[in-house]
Length: 81
Image 1 (tube, one colour):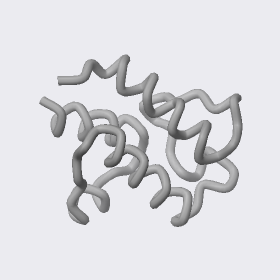
Image 2 (cartoon, helix red, strand yellow):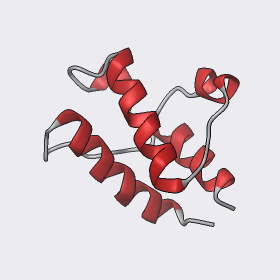
Image 3 (cartoon, one colour):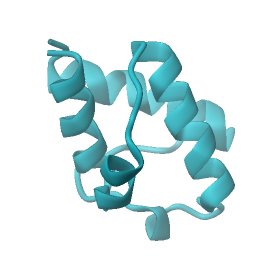
């Protein structure tokens, strides 16, 4: 199981690659409305990159329930357990 701190480090790199910004800092409460340009296309890029990196797949129901980065981190932790 990946530790949450390791997941945050990995996701930070993914988010910075997707948004082409080095100043993004992930917090558990960070959500799409908090990052300029985070639209549905960026969301798909993020999810695909996370799935590829961790070798996991998300179900539509799981994606629909995600409200922020903390939810994503907990889901990745559960799927990599």
